[in-house]
Amino acid sequence: MDKRIKYSYHDKRSIVLSIEKGKESISSAALRLGCSRSRIQQWLGHYRANGLAGLKQKPRKYSGDFRLRVITEMINKRLSLMETCSVFKIPNIYTVHRWLEIFRLEGKDKLLTLCQGRKRKTMSRKKETVKKDLSPEQQKLAELQAENEYLRAENAFLKKLDALMKEQEAQEKQKQERKPSGN
Image 1 (cartoon, rainbow, N blue to C red):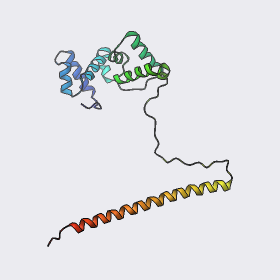
Image 2: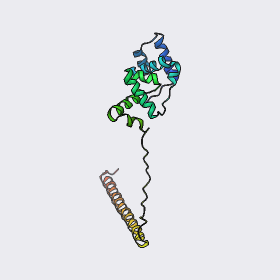
Image 3: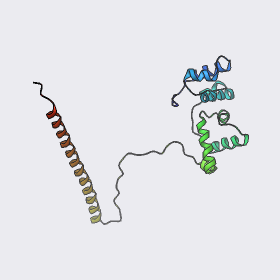
């Protein structure tokens, strides 16, 4: 069962309606669709709380105040994760679970300032800045030293590449010498 599968509104609707009419059990529906029972229970919760519109929910960004309100109401009313998701129209249980853990471990301030998603990583090469408090001669010297380092690295790379190519050629020669002649 792959957790990354996205199910269409039509799939969710047909499963929920067949369970609600008593035509199918949660277990058989999960088996037929190839997903977990908890996922189908979550869909049922969304359906029971919000009707068919509850099955169309999409992930969205949540404000810090909203996250705090969800967690405090969950704790005060003693709601389960699934019930909380249904009441607040949050499509994924893990989202609320993560908020609850952050609230317990780091407090409400961290929950209020929680950032969404991952930090961006840039793959570009960092530009070396020349210090502006240096004299023109010292700046020129720093630039020449940086260029010298670059050229040394390039030279070492080319030497290594040459050695690897020679090694590969030697291995190919050995393979050809081992082959028996076709006569």
